[in-house]
Amino acid sequence: MKKHILLPFFILISSISFAQETATITLSRKGLWSGTAGATKIFMDGNIICELSNNSFSIHSIPTGKHVFTARWYSKKAKEKDNGDEFAVEIEIKPSEQYYLQVVKQDKGLSSYVAVQEITSNTWNKIKEGLDKGDCH
Picture 1: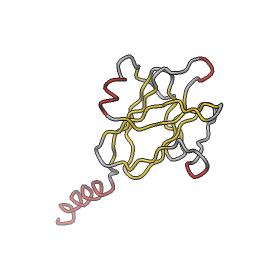
Picture 2 (picture 1 turned 90 degrees about the horizontal axis):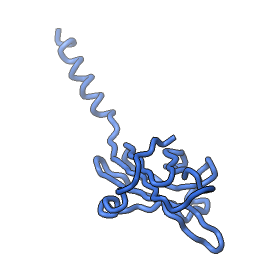
Picture 3 (picture 1 turned 30 degrees about the horizontal axis):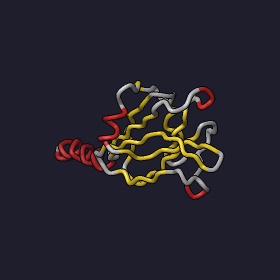
């Protein structure tokens, strides 16, 4: 009889201890480019998490911990921070927090690159007007 009473308790405790803590991140891209720029691929730890079109945003639940975010126009492969991507952003994600990243254009010499930069909630509130919720294809 005791085994049957304790079993639900152990299942509850084990599911709580294995639940991954998450935070929310909002990715945005204000329409700075047209034509050939197309959708910008946003990567987290080297994996595509979203392709954002002009004037769009996307909201994601991500696990806590240290993550590196990068953006690319054409490539389906992220450039690693250790491998020359000076535009990468590393963020220590804390449980239940809200983070905001914006795709921006960076000029380096005669070339332009896309990058992500962390922005404040105040900045997000100013730029979100006119942005459509993207579907992250």
